Image (tube, rainbow, N blue to C red):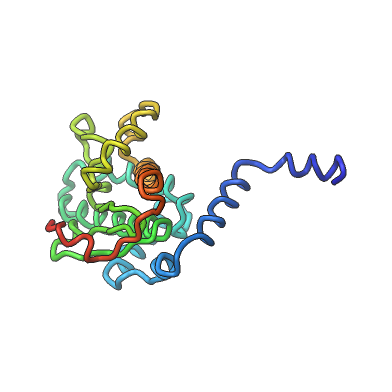
Length: 232
């Protein structure tokens, strides 16, 4: 290897390394996990997510593409929605109805970003706010509509912990909480942002899988029946 080529190798940035790591993780996944990543969204979720894509494109002029890198745009859109949905304007769609559309459409989009990053399936409910994701590679229930509802609340001081919107196995929770406790504190506005919520999910899944590998030497591969005890 020449010095010049060595310098070029040394110039690889973190994004290149992260991309390589992501590709490696994809190759190591089981066929079942890869199939879940490739599965299309349920029609109801797909329609809601597409609605969010249109809303955000109209608001900021950029089309979302279901990657994690687009979540800061969703963060920005929801900050604006928080401000505009707070008052009721006579003659317009009632604020509560508009808020529900934002919660369900943005929640569906956020959920699809999560599902394309972490193998999972949707569990649909009669109440659109209760649609949830159940992960294949760690026992985690994600409620993306709850994340969005928090993000557009005007009483930010009333927010809960960073595990709100997630259901974890009781045995896994201490490991996840310990990992999250290592992170620096953030402002409330950042705390409730979808991009931050995705980081929390990434950390939770990593902590759970690390615990399984340390204890059993094998990471979990869950199926829908493993979530039978989730009633909500």
